Length: 188
Image 1 (cartoon, helix red, strand yellow):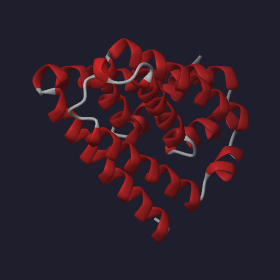
Image 2 (cartoon, helix red, strand yellow; image 1 turned 30 degrees about the vertical axis):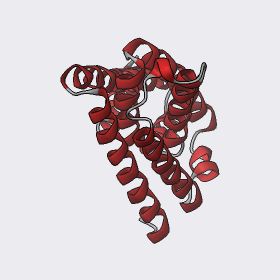
Image 3 (cartoon, helix red, strand yellow; image 1 turned 45 degrees about the horizontal axis):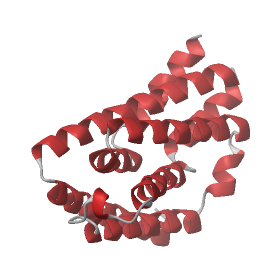
């Protein structure tokens, strides 16, 4: 059981302030806390399963500059999409587009975590400790950190207009995307 606590502590601290929390925060502002958390919990379960099952090999499979640049590009695309749709209303969107944007954000969340520090930390822990306990601890940590971002996103929606929050999120998405691409190009 100590492995659960170790995995929780390491993964929670590594996840705080991560780019995927930005995805959770802005997605919750648009789709609501319950839908966002439900979608992201499924992604987290898959991520932690991959991390534990694949161990350190995941970093070599999904790592590298090319993968980092692709994730950065996806952040830029999500930022532009968010900016473009800031004045749109979910009810005015064609049927299914609201669900599609939630699926897209969930996919980005999943891709952004591939090869990330929390995934690598989970894989490293699983190589040394009980895989089941590491999965439980890392899963709980990711859900807790993502839940925190979702709650903050809901609070921001109550304080800021939808279009203003969407545009702030769009600018931040593009900035994170550009920084991620630059880090991939310069090898940082």
